[in-house]
Amino acid sequence: MTTRSWLSRARRALAAVGTAALLAAGLLTGTGTAQAATQGPCDVYAAGGTPCVAAHSTTRALFASYNGPLYQVQRASDSALQDVGVLSAGGVADAAAQDSFCAGTTCIVTRVYDQTGGGNTLVYQGPGGTGGADRAAVANTEALSVGGRKAYALYINPGNSYFAHNPTGGVPTGSSPEGEYMVTSGTHVNNGCCFDYGNTETDHKADGNGAMDAINFGTECWFGGCTGTGPWVQADLENGLFSGGSKTWNPGQVPQTSRFVTAMLKNDGTTRMALKGADAQSGGLAQLYSGSLPSGWSPMHKQGAVILGSGGDCCQTNRNASAGTFYEGAMVKGYPSDATDAAVQANIAAAGYRTTTPFTPGAKVSLQATTPCCTGDYLRHDTSDDRVVIAPVTSGSSAADKGNATWIVRAGLANSNCVSFESADTPGNYLRHYAFQLHLQPDPGTSQFAADATFCAQPGNSGTGYSLQSSNYPAEYIRHYRLAGYLASDGGANAWDTPSSWAQDTSWLAAAPWS
Image 1 (cartoon, helix red, strand yellow):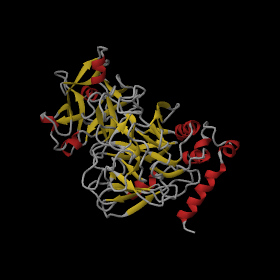
Image 2 (image 1 turned 90 degrees about the vertical axis):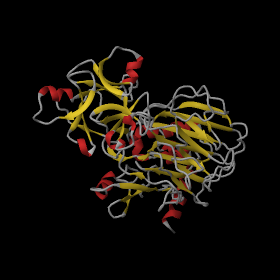
Image 3 (image 1 turned 180 degrees about the vertical axis):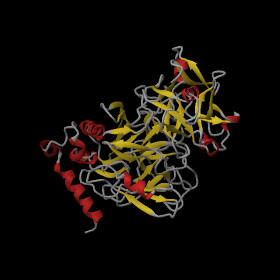
Image 4 (image 1 turned 30 degrees about the vertical axis):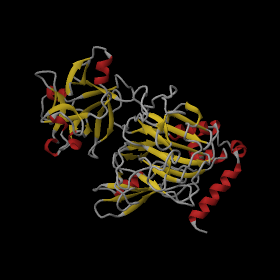
């Protein structure tokens, strides 16, 4: 018997156990730290009678018994490949194995393995992968902590996407019922089409209403009339992103802005669907929609392939335009109960997703430029006016210069999931943008100032350090240009928006504070 067939048989046997037996064993309590070690989300789904048919993660095992590879990386120096597994059965990814293999070079994620044994392993849509016009995501863009252990996210930028199709892999087709979830991030999104995870076409073409059944997460407002700026959990059913049961905006939608977000979609294929969202670190699920399928999209016509990071009509000759982060996700056969959904969310919260960012409120930090021209320069406020610039700072610099280049991290004035930077030597004054230039100014307590002074730390656009994304202009990042500080996009009308060295100029090291 092959390993794959043995795993498939084991998963089917587990699905037959039933919820009552697992409750008796204490596996569906949803409380305490032991839960994450004794079961995974797919064990919860199996107990509820809706077994996983595809399970993917770069951070942890989704079955308590899983002890195989999570994903594969390829290093640039010699094109060698390496599988990254778990530290123990049912455990967290062995990030140290990736760090060792990729030391001194860069790595990409070439595939994310299907933990069910069903063969629905995601492979990047590009040359050397499934073929196509996209490329694989960089492997070490975002590090995080899961259960106190280091792990890496699959950090998808425009031009990255993954696909799987196994005709015998068990993914629901036609109008069969299906459920899906993923853990993503509310701080790395855009309005490009389409950051999806779920059921898609086998031919990479838009094959009509109901040919897809995938979770979508981002800020794209497909039919117009949206309230707020997102990001939202929506359903990509092909030929539309649905916030609810029609093309009209669903007033029950709530933006999911948490650092870690649980997104859920379930669809019985003929009459109803539901959307749910939650903070993946704590709390319960919010019911965003539960009701009829959109008119014209019933019954569904699912084809049974799996997509991650793009829409269904991608990416053989065109390229993915979306951005998003993927930590884990699964697809199940059947329509999960609300109790099962809640137990899965409890399992995710118990897993202990945490950031490893140095931008903790109250901490001091100095922001060091990473562009080769300027690695001795730090972001600092000018002494002659309120402009913010970069300038050299060394151990021999004056106390005043060191103070000018030191910032106190505060919870974001406009969004507590992001940060604001208060000057260490000028209390009450914050780094803010005005007319796309950076200034140090006192906080007047207005909502406009709060928005202008709030930034969301993201993995460095160049693959090094961190990039600081504007809270109210998400396409713009803190950049140095000709020694001055700006808010800049990658290409635009202003001189400081030039694409030349943009990725390097917007990437910063969080260095030890100078004062």
